[in-house]
Image (tube, rainbow, N blue to C red; front, side, top):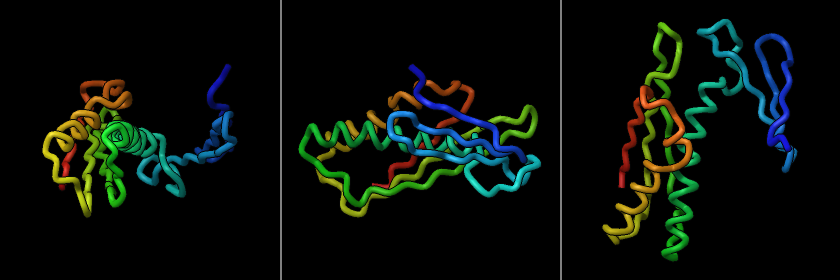
Length: 134
């Protein structure tokens, strides 16, 4: 059974629907690649997926240890390579206002982030730079 159903809306825009939830995502080509840049580009979604996956797995690990990741936030910077046009590097900067003081748990969280399914699925040629600012 499919997970996602998508369609081309014209003008370099797509719409994808998550079939289980009905949630929809619009993607748009970026301005520097003939698009309007009015929504996430496909490569933005890949970059966002990496960080979201990292946090999801960190959340699972934290919950097992009875820790809430409240206050955790992040920023993603996508760096494109010109030729061939592809993602060269994804930089994820994590910030946590009130991190736990348990250094062993912090290391487990970092390891969980670096080994999330999206991180492991991306081509090794894409540099994944992760900064844990906590």
